[in-house]
Length: 197
Ligand SMILES: Cc1cc2nc3c(=O)[nH]c(=O)nc-3n(C[C@H](O)[C@H](O)[C@H](O)COP(=O)(O)O)c2cc1C
Image 1 (cartoon, rainbow, N blue to C red):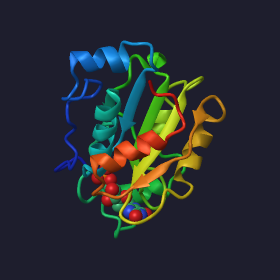
Image 2 (cartoon, rainbow, N blue to C red):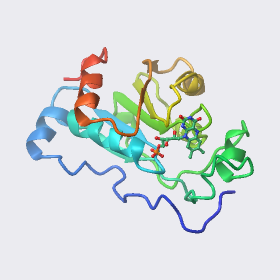
Image 3 (spheres, rainbow, N blue to C red):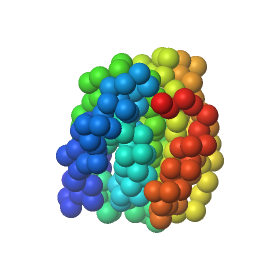
């Protein structure tokens, strides 16, 4: 299991809460109206994916859910120069399913799920498999996105898609760099082939 000292990720404590910019007016337009109900679920250890997820939730007035590991990853755990670090061992273990500390109680309510994660060794962190195996996504549209230092999204999203098979409509994924602006995220959302309103 991963180490327990000096966690990098303390969690925002905001799981499943509306984002800070969430207004009552926005609630009416974005979530309580006739439009689809949208969840932005993400995993992030150093904040890059979190930022894209927050922009996405703000732009769409969507709910935000942070996938927080039961055992937080330490700096040592995330050291990809060490093939014995926790993240390296997990990524090399096809059966690794790191536990998640909370769950989405109302997953059945959502029509669209944005799924954000960092690239670890060219793939999604194994905790994303844990997340996807925890719910039924039947009838939902899933839109994956990732952040990375330089790698593309590669086969990471397709490999996640395989976890939920054909029960969901799975759109092609997008990779962002760590310094993506909110405007860039808005352009991406506009380019997605779904009826958001
Ligand atoms: C264990 C580990 C493996 C990584 N592997 C890659 C990689 O294969 N390619 C890449 O471009 N970046 C890689 N990175 C960098 C992250 O993808 C990048 O910093 C990402 O934006 C981190 O997202 P976060 O801040 O949301 O955790 C790796 C980072 C870690 C911790």
